[in-house]
View: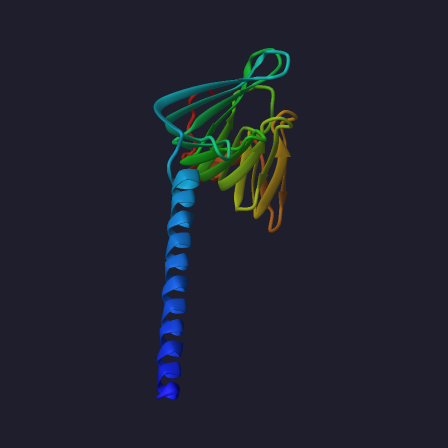
Length: 205
């Protein structure tokens, strides 16, 4: 009789432990879901037809960002842009570059990540680097350093190049392609690659 009661008590104890553990895990799951929703899924601010102006420490306009839609997440201080267009200005307030992509993310460190059909066009007549196209890119808006880990196409009045990766600086109008580099030189190499060049927008050039 005592043995049977002990077995029953043990079963009840084990059942209670299982129920308590289940309730704790379920509560933790709910809390994790709330944290995920509050910190990632729900933006602090959403706006349409956005225009953002960025200034350097001297108070001179350095960047302008236009987008169909923007979402700001205050917890991580990150902004997401849909169909962004960014214009970079030099110290004389003259536009140097126009940059387009399908999506973009701007971090609190002033680093811009570009995703999908990234197109960069020079607005300066004196530079030899006129066009750049890739699928993803990263731009440090403070140093103007530009990197891409995807296939990159560069072109100008006298050259056309493709490669696997790229590093450059928009302020210095320089770019270096790395890996399986193919370059065409000539008076008008763009005509030899017309099917690719025609994908670039020509506004502002």
